[in-house]
Picture 1 (cartoon, one colour):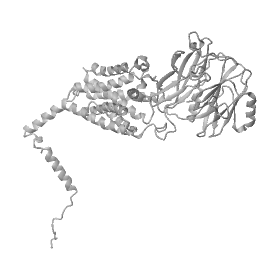
Picture 2 (cartoon, rainbow, N blue to C red; picture 1 turned 30 degrees about the horizontal axis):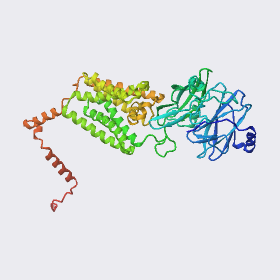
Picture 3 (cartoon, rainbow, N blue to C red; picture 1 turned 90 degrees about the vertical axis):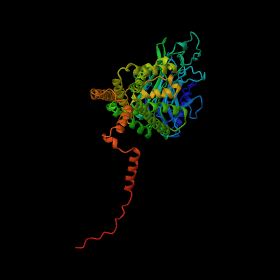
Picture 4 (cartoon, rainbow, N blue to C red; picture 1 turned 135 degrees about the vertical axis):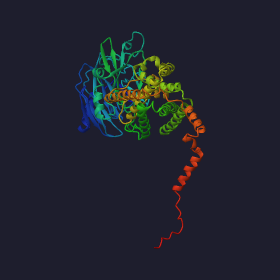
Length: 564
């Protein structure tokens, strides 16, 4: 990740003149304070950036360069050194200006490929706090970058503490975090800004970075996630959404001076642009598409006809319950490939659903149906509750509290509706079936509604996800699919209530019905089914008919036409 460093002794002005004379005009880039510029960098070619006419009241400047994903080298010298250079997709350098210094030079280079970049130089005055000015890693280094580390579950945001402002030529205040020290009065606000869903273009990224660079823009466009004091840990965790572009920045405030300053914004898409597999362009695997589309089609049927075709409903519900548990266990306990795990989940889910149907066929218990349907409906409603800001309450960072609450809500649903089995079953068919359709649509049109249940899967798979701040963007696709979900849900429930209002609440016990019919066939000779051959004889007869299809007909003998 990029770091931001302070150079106490800036590049001497004579050296700047020498470099300007030796650099060809094609390799020079002129900058102005506070102006965003898009620049083109070429592989293994060093460009020199120039900034002049710096006002006297500016005490330091932050030089930022942003690329989509390519690492860029930013250095004060043409031959970079560790203390005067930084590398990353959001690299930055901080220059503390000397008295009467009004110009500076730096160098940019990319070593992997040609890339488009955006750069800006932001000025700060003596009363403004210095972002990252109290970096605990080194007393001679300022690190005003926002560092990002992400995986498929979460993104961790970290930054170095700031220092109070100081004038040109003045020794910076010591970073002592003791009582009544000036650093302790500083406050930090962490902001988040989502890019449009599924948009991976540089144009949108650069336009969005402009909204998250300066203090006023960050406060106007970003969403405040955290407010931290100087004594708090300067590291927070948020949920990660692969393929969703997001920008983070931190504003440090000095209440005494009534001033503030912005760190260097950092961005991530929660995925890699360079991996051959599972990159940002191929997040949706074919196996996942087939799996979820199949589930969505069955869910659409269950949404409108689930109660009438109870065995199909139980097969579907059992598939989901067993599939969820088996996916979590296989992912945690094995190192199998994702496609193999998904195949095993499909097999185990089908077996679980079949066993559930067999249990219903043997027992015919209405309470059994109520428990299965209520648990699945409770699971979905509990997931929906923890999809809200309630999930970010600190008490739920404890796994025991979270899972006890989650399971209690899931079991509360069948208990409430225990005396109303048919309404509960129809509600479960409508909710679960319509949400399965939304998951299938998610394969083709990105929607954050999928994370209603995916966040629970992440919590079950990844222990550290409990500390993640859960926040997802709601954009046009989400509002459209919320309307689709509500329409499917309401229409499916109303249709099933209307269809079943004159029907028995539940089918009779399948086992008792089968046993009664078998006994009747054995004793009643007038029943046509009494004369049906045993199943063994019927199977032999069917096999014989199949054999005849593949047997060549033999001639019956010589045939002589009649002679008239």
